[in-house]
Length: 299
Image (cartoon, rainbow, N blue to C red; front, side):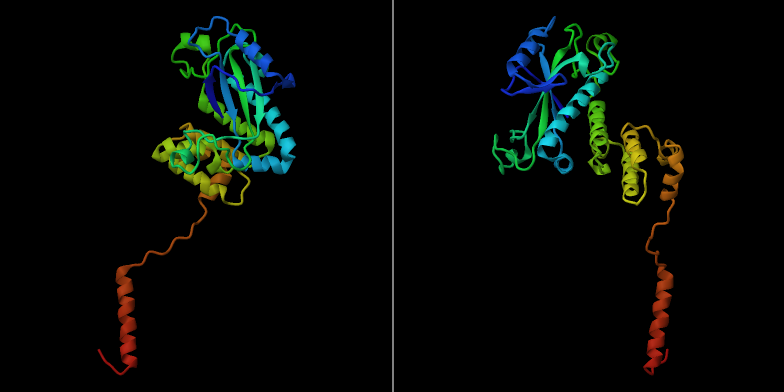
């Protein structure tokens, strides 16, 4: 999920938890009028893009079909906005009902100048992307539904500036993206591979050597026929957050599942025997001597 700021709207029909056919004129009017005490330089709204991967879309199409996928993504968007509201940790902002927001389903995506394919010249800006491209674009007002509370996902102070956080709320983008991923898996019954998780990707890109080692261990465990899916997901998030100083702490953190995990870590792994060069030389000498004797030669 990505969050963008903006000051203009495309011509589309919109939806939220109150209805599926909301005219763009109504959306514009509501957003434009919900700007109490905003400065001229303040963005009136933010855009949130819910863009499932090709693997995720394949799962949805197989499970719900084309039209079913569209409707289920709309339902999912409502849940996402619940997580968006909770992420601010503001009194009075607890769910999508406390926000002024609208969403729209899109069937197509187009290449932007920032895409790798445009940069290397294989695609042109504005060209339609191949494959399934279902996604949801959400517009959410900077002010809450009452037009009294100012909210900004750009405030990432995490409590460092209490006065600023009290005005705008604290917003953790990584936590929001993580909650969206976990919500998707639970809501749609999607079995996400460890290497496809946000936690794994971020850790292997920005983590410490210890974190990367812990993540590789978890990846190896996942490939064995064991029923530790949920504990492994929890561990990957913990590793990404730097909660464990070593593997022992990581294993002990999951309680009753720790014994199973530890037994897996202790399973013997085949390793080619290390050859002793002295013994190998002696074997070759004896073999050569035996061969020479059989051919009538003596030492």
